[in-house]
Image 1: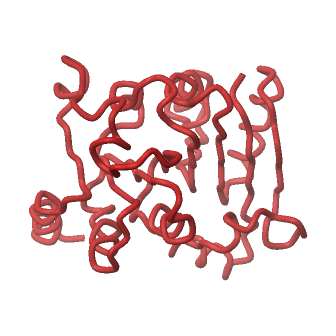
Image 2: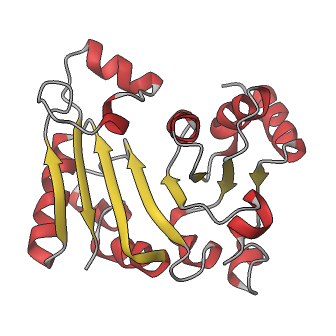
Length: 224
């Protein structure tokens, strides 16, 4: 994407009512104005709150919001030019129960209060295969503890990925640390009984992976 196009998207994001772009200082140096109040101030209801971390173009967040109007969804990514597409679609199609937050995932507990979130989705994260990059892996122990802070006590985590490495790494970590694995499937489109929300919503890249016969994996779990 050209820098001209990126700038145009950044400018447009600033005009979207469903996009929130706090600075790092807004989050870290004082209590962020929406922390603990997303449902009250943004969605104006007390429906379950669901996050998608590293939401990319926002296709999954928007797809879930359309499928589950009785829940509120927030797509989170540091790359605003990417989720511009999802935010614009939600406005054009009048989908009121989805919003987008531009921030880094490691600041999640500054953006949301304890027990504020019902469910978290991580869809197609970078597997960070090199050993030295494990600290950036979105399902490592440090990240899981951040998610636990904002999740309700019975909050659900979902990991959907095309990376068999990421699937195996996460399963091993969950079992090793004593977390509760509710469901695991290493090829959701080939095995029967896959949850509908996992197979009925596909991102652009996911459909490309499927064309290449790449298995899509999924884990649903609770952090203990």
